[in-house]
Image (tube, rainbow, N blue to C red; front, side):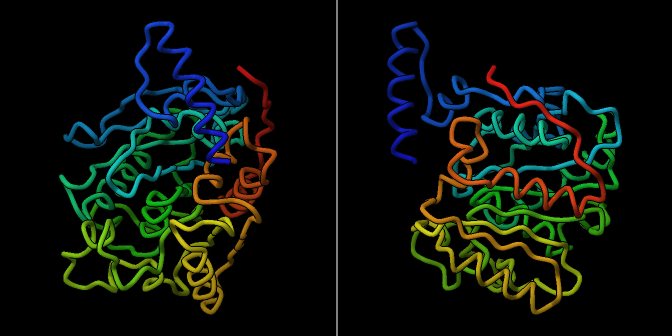
Length: 302
């Protein structure tokens, strides 16, 4: 599937160049040109949740929402080194069309910061959500977290290790459930690449691992991966799911046949949704544990 995205990006890039528009990345091109769910819309752009230039967030709202909707904070991936929320608007609209007031925060990246600074950014974004999301139809008592790849790590770690939310002045119980797509949760020892760079200076390596904090206090978790993922091995998902089950925490574990690391993200889009029911299954799980019913959504091409 990622090869298909690369071909699409190349064709889109050629079209943009011909039109005099400079392209920046395949995902940005895909997000800019691909069809979108029209059951969601951008309601707020670049709201600050801190003083740093990357401490900004966007809010997407369901078109059909009437207030009191569950709130989903989605963290994108990029190895804690790359990424911008502007490339993930298709995710924001897809999740909003499922009935969630959806928040996409940026966060500071390596090499400017290392573990755990990006988690503190995520906690600060959640504090903003608690204080402000009612203005956009969201219920601050019904917050769930989700993410892909490094963003799945951020979402799950914020849900399992209460220290970061407490530092931000947020009651950890505000997080009702978490969802991780192709996330790294149990990756000791650190390899010589990204993991060592981002986490290697931590005084306690075990304290960097979400699996360390899995216990009876943990929120329900939807954990999904693809069986052909060679970047973040499916063993990460299996390990965390097993630990949570041992603690009697509700878990939905999904290993999608034929999907690789990027596919679990792309399956959220209109273009690739038929490849696997990632969006429907994740949304149903999070809706169940957020305490609300689904807001009917319309899915059409823009």
